[in-house]
Length: 114
Image (cartoon, rainbow, N blue to C red; front, side, top):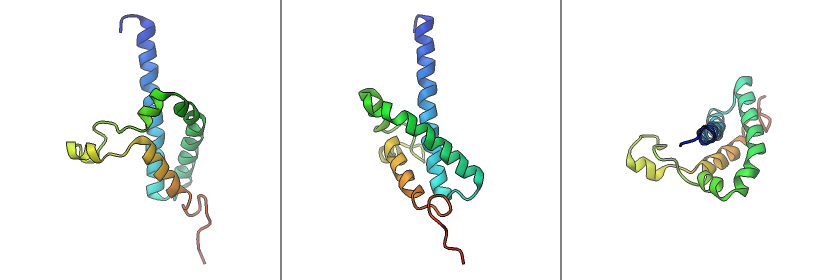
């Protein structure tokens, strides 16, 4: 990391990585909670909008695609080595959250209130 440009590019890359990771995490949290409040629904919609703009570029670039389908070290829930082996790739977490959100009452389908 010698020049100022390389430091700036590294910083931008770190920000981009954390933004995508946080967007997926927010979607997963929204799917797990069921999006009961309007604030949760808005957060999930904003994360979805961000990811629909970014994901095509991620899947076009082999390096980004590899990042998206690999697990992040230390991302296991317990923090141990066994949890790292069982950690889901970012893409798998995203796909499972989207599948859950497809059937979320009052978000994508009507609730069965009488």
